[in-house]
Length: 508
Ligand SMILES: Nc1ncnc2c1ncn2[C@@H]1O[C@H](COP(=O)(O)OP(=O)(O)OP(=O)(O)O)[C@@H](O)[C@H]1O
Ligand SMILES: [Mg+2]
Image 1 (tube, rainbow, N blue to C red):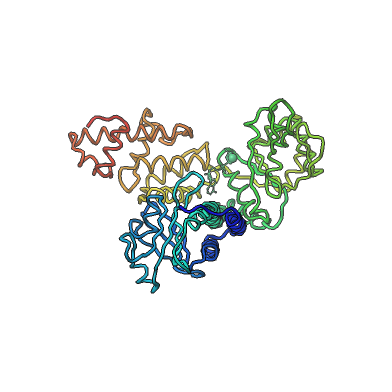
Image 2 (image 1 turned 90 degrees about the horizontal axis):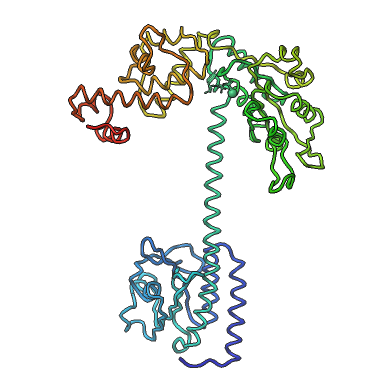
């Protein structure tokens, strides 16, 4: 390799540095590849230059067909001089292309170009991995020199950094576009789900509530929602939020009963950094809900101290974080729910009257299910349809089952009805949910007992598992361990049955 004169070397290095700066300001991959090609052609005084990027998955090289075009040329990486460089990492300097066996003349045929001399160097990233090949064609006078080789290697290493950055940015942009689209899609889902019509019920009492939600949709008054457990208080709170001008701001729900008194203040108002050793600053729920809605569930369980603090935020629209010295202004719509009789609490001195009037600008009372039995068929079918959609099954209630559902006591209200429908659907042997299915889930219950027992939420999954185990064992016994027949009885594929037997360790 001929040694390079010092002044010339400096000149080239300066040129490469200048090119590198230009490259780093180009974030779009396609324009960047154009820029690199253009600069390399003038630096090496040749006719053409291309960067080929290696697609490791397909073992192909790709590059832009020509400067300024977005057309892509792709070919097998085991072909041609650039491919050889990309796979071996070797620099290849060819003085007569057509007499070199590595030369792949199909590209010339495709582009109508006549290659004479070729210089190809590997493009490596910071970790030394080859990401492609940099190829220059047809030195204007003579052949590519050792100096050209060094220059192209130096240029390639700068190009690699710029290319990887541009690729990363391109990927981030694509991800961001995808997320934006997904987000828009989720918003539509949320809006559909909580549009007033997510509240099922055609009777007068539910319809009155639906109309009220619609009537106050443009206002942001505080609303108190009362009703027994499982009557749909949170459903109404969400419907109020997602139908309001604040719909695209946060809906933050906080269960006051679940918080110990000591944590409540920092949870609601946040905490300043350094209040105690190792404590980072944290946003409180009020600030998280800024511009949106804060739903205080079980507000009747708040201590008098906490009530006083919330009242202050509602009156003055400012709050102070725990350990903070400044007031922070917040704009929050408050929705509150309780299953307690707040007026009785007031007369016992357990709830502040002034807070009560602040939160109860509008009062919505959710009726217990036993008072709106006429809604049960509609609700039960709605939950069954939901189950069928999720599991791609098709199920219906037998009339006597529906009669039982309508007359059951439902102490856990709509939530309990929903859980019961899900349990029945999961246990149903046939497409029609029959009376005997009502008895199945409560394994120890005597037949004289009403099937619909209050089902604890956490036990639902267990109940379904137990039911599956029993049904599988029974089906296997009935069919004398014929898995094909047992699977058919259970409405499962044979593999589905085998999977379940494995999961539950049931011997076949
Ligand atoms: N009218 C209704 N239409 C459709 N679904 C309903 C209706 N009422 C309640 N639900 C459903 O019943 C379940 C319980 O409702 P939700 O959580 O709103 O009750 P809650 O009053 O907040 O209960 P808790 O006091 O126990 O917190 C939810 O799945 C909800 O979607
Ligand atoms: Mg609730």
